[in-house]
Length: 278
Ligand SMILES: NC(=O)c1ccc[n+]([C@@H]2O[C@H](COP(=O)([O-])OP(=O)(O)OC[C@H]3O[C@@H](n4cnc5c(N)ncnc54)[C@H](OP(=O)(O)O)[C@@H]3O)[C@@H](O)[C@H]2O)c1
Image (cartoon, rainbow, N blue to C red; front, side, top):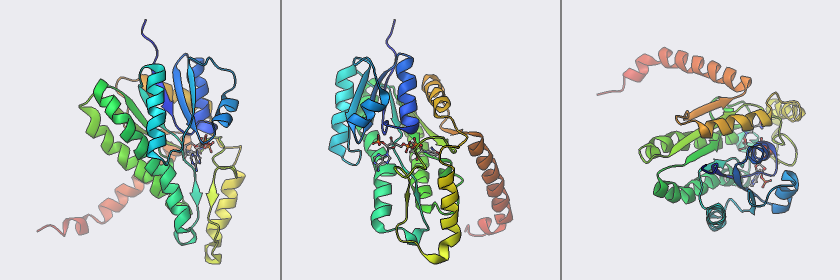
């Protein structure tokens, strides 16, 4: 009997990443998972078979750290089949409220770390002519909400990267899927995770009030991380997985509304669109 797939998951000490690690371990998969704190990760996962689970302390912003962790996972398990770029956080604020440092940090984690991990995993996947990259974007990467412009920019980046990646690697036998969750009951909206602009501008009071309503949703979001974990596992077992997958009723509804808006806008401006050709 062939062994079950080997997974590598970033940002796994809580939320969707942790739920996925737990579900995979229960189902007998082999899992390498990363966190900024190996202790937090090990404590959160609890008792496990140390031949099945490899917790790794990784600085996702460092190519060297990512490279070392993926090499370690491959050496430990003898291979790698599924990579999940899950680590990420929300950053709220009007664009001019956010400092350059706040913006760069969010791109470092939400975008450049994703690229880092993909660049390190790809040579291995190309060599074996198989593998699945699953990148976690957000509904904000297609139908974003007011007051989350920079977060949306990072998640649009992940959406675009993955859509193109899926085409680029298809003929090599490798798959790529971007998953866009709606609101899930994780630490995403908790103080420990989400970042709001430090420098508030009074003219953006409406946005700042809406952020308070988001913060109040912490703990009552409709999405169940344990159910998302089952979806991720089924996705990786699907021989013909979708390139884009939206999870949560809210995500589905927001995509539907955005598609309607896009169609209306496209048709309303069709003449202008057609007016620029030679
Ligand atoms: N929950 C939602 O409503 C929702 C909706 C749409 C998209 N998402 C996306 O889903 C992914 C997982 O988020 P979650 O909901 O599970 O939130 P979470 O419970 O806060 O977990 C986020 C994970 O990302 C890692 N992370 C957060 N900030 C980081 C930083 N500055 N540097 C490095 N790693 C960092 C953390 O890893 P360690 O602490 O282990 O290092 C943590 O385990 C994220 O990409 C998020 O954008 C979530």
